[in-house]
Length: 508
Ligand SMILES: C[S@@+](CC[C@H](N)C(=O)[O-])C[C@H]1O[C@@H](n2cnc3c(N)ncnc32)[C@H](O)[C@@H]1O
Image 1: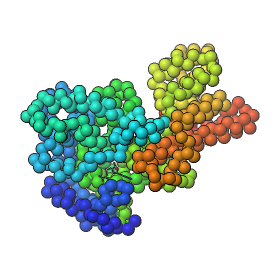
Image 2: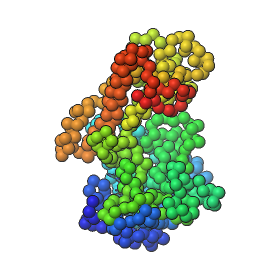
Image 3: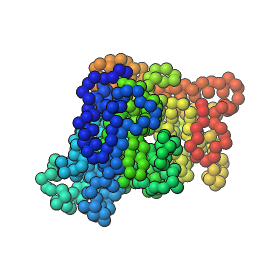
């Protein structure tokens, strides 16, 4: 990539950034509108690994820890309104800071953030139809978000006209602004933990089990995108989590909403699968964006969003990744497709089996079995899926023993299991209104497609290709088993030594 020549955007923003204690190496990087990426940062010269591109004091991040609103409203009242759970508190802080205009430290920053998004949250019903069959529609979470708005934010705002004057409500505290702020958090925030300090905490901030600060300086953590379980604190069903997770687990796993922070400058960096060449590290007083690889002059500076599948990229960020795939063509190697457990039970029931599946599936779920299985581009069959199929196929005496001993079947693949899996995948493919060939044909007419439609086609194609390839792999396995004249058992499928519902995978 050659150095772009469009309007350079760093200077005006950098002057605000530096007036609040930030430091930016403006001889090394600039920011511009990059075609198809919105704004992005690029290198003005070759940059060595381990170089600090910019740094900012923690006080310049915008979070529950840095906005004065929680203390003005009062910590107890904050909790009473439920603003201490999920993202609603941070959304309110952002709305309030925006309403203060130049009195807010973040005035320039907030007005630099986008107010329109390509995420499905803002799509028309017609465009959403294009996502039918994918994991996206159930996870958009508009209703849950609006519930938080009505039940937590509005009562808090109405309780303090001194903080939220009546004449500012329509402009700054509408449900539309709520979604905009929520989307800004979803696509731009970072997880930044409180500093616990001291060498004894060396491991503390090592979010991904990856090395600490590349330059071996003081212990630091990597600031990564926040988990979405924190989005809505009540039930774990915020934007992006329609999965109805167990409440106790939520309590334990839930991210501290105070760890979710908007980080000026850092959120100007785009990301692409496998391309990260810079990361945000946090230390006691400051956050630093450092290069993690050599970057050539003119190349884009990429952060990481954690390399999610295209369904999540689209839902959170409004774009998809297309990179060369090992097996040829373009796609996202991190793509996944979800298969619901109830589809498996439907297939077994429809096969004419006299087995009462309802009783078994209830037991299986009580035992902590998965209700959704995730297939990936490696085409492995998740062992819990094999366990479920085998459970549903057990003869009555074996089922009785299984229940008595609370020991589910081993994840061994055999002809009968393959038969059910093949049918499950066929049925799963039929949940999409179009075929892969039809999608390909649509993509050829790219010029006439809207960005939403194009992205939806890429998401659903990625999912269908996994299903199709897994299906082909199973069919090969079935024919090999028949060819071998055995009972269908295949050595390299199912390890047979996994216990219970361990989330291992069996290679097909
Ligand atoms: C953290 S912001 C990065 C800065 C953003 N481009 C801007 O103009 O403000 C994340 C957003 O950037 C865009 N983006 C990031 N990576 C992208 C990519 N690989 N392709 C297209 N858009 C991307 C998406 O709109 C995403 O929601």
